[in-house]
Length: 184
Image 1 (cartoon, rainbow, N blue to C red):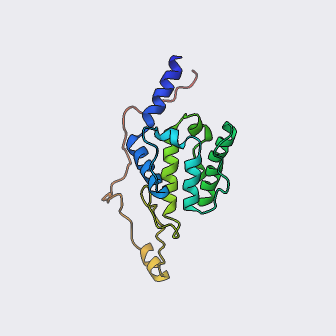
Image 2: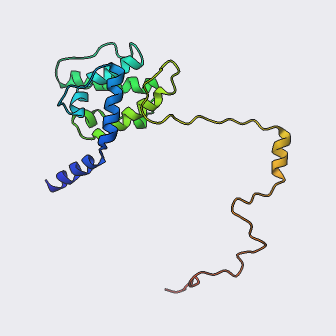
Image 3: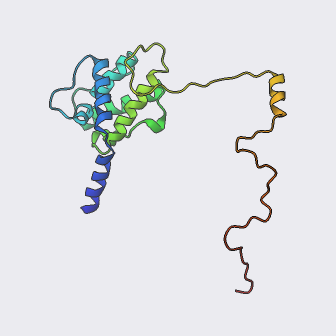
């Protein structure tokens, strides 16, 4: 039991209340409604309904059927549909949380990280006008140099590490030398 308690404490320590608050406010802004008062962040997200609604706001019709009742499997299906829609939207596989992270509340920090990944991905969709969550992803800075410029660059000696002023490493020795002992 002690190990289980330690693991649970470690997972809880990874949670960042500020990030959870930002993610919650982002979801509320997109959906145009507040989370129910007094209900925990993870409890509101747990059945996947809010997440499916969120995805349908980002991409209308992304999740055609949202299960509002039924057994655990129906509610877990919401989470799976949300994850599938996230990947189709452009969120990388490695950024998508596991279903049990949310449904069994095993790793809510990972769920929040996934929401931030989704928020960053919205920047890459020009049809989405906001709100946004997280920093804007960097863009590739393509440069086209002429052949002449590239040839000119080859004649220059790079000195990023500084000049060695003619010094070499010959004779340099740190600590004891390596001794090879035969016959042992």
